[in-house]
View 1 (cartoon, rainbow, N blue to C red):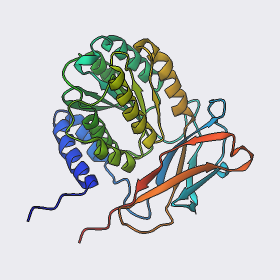
View 2: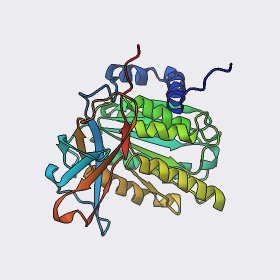
View 3: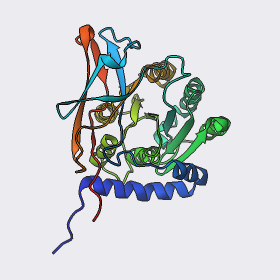
View 4: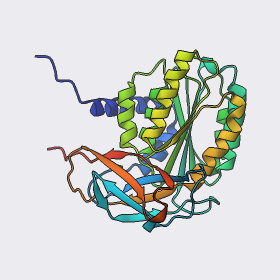
Length: 322
């Protein structure tokens, strides 16, 4: 009798653990720091379900003046009681700690734009100086990750400057490595992904990646610079990058040229600054590993005027092993 096939989520987590272990061997400082901070995201009923929430008006402008009683949160249709709330932080000097992930596609197809890509990425990091740490993930046929504190900011910049375009594109694997490393961080987690196309190298499937994104509390912003892609390739990449971002409550951007990156990074910074953080303890005490649908709504007079972006749910904790 053939062995039973493991569930998709279990296979995805097993693969990411192996991939991450291999990647972190080359970056000991990242591994040691992450080990010191490592805590499960969902251990049981005592844990908060954390949501990053962005609110926009019909005009597209960001709404930054809401209070906790302006929000209702529903899990599987049941209203939840908020246990934590932090308003959007326009100045960047308050609110929960911010952990920033910057993912750069440095595969060979990036060759025409790599110089400007690096310049724009460095400018972006210089804008978000309130992040407590920065995880830089550069990927081609392989995935390399390193985490830097703000005191090590110059090292992060130098790492970006040294990048050269070569190899294929292990996009899904790279995201998996970042998500695994971010799972032990407390506070807000923002990941910005810049790539010029689809995945051509990963061992992880797209479905497995979506499961990992659903289990994570990272908000993902994707930037697809697709001007050098065929029409079919660009359409496919656009669909994938949009789904990656929307699964986490983030947003996708598709500049016409690499020269548009500066303006897009400014938009991302504005959204990061305006993001609300909401937390609640689920009224469902079961540890069954099931998907729980979450919906965030605006109350009061503006409920029809404002649009809310947040992740659409999470996986409950698994029952303890016997």
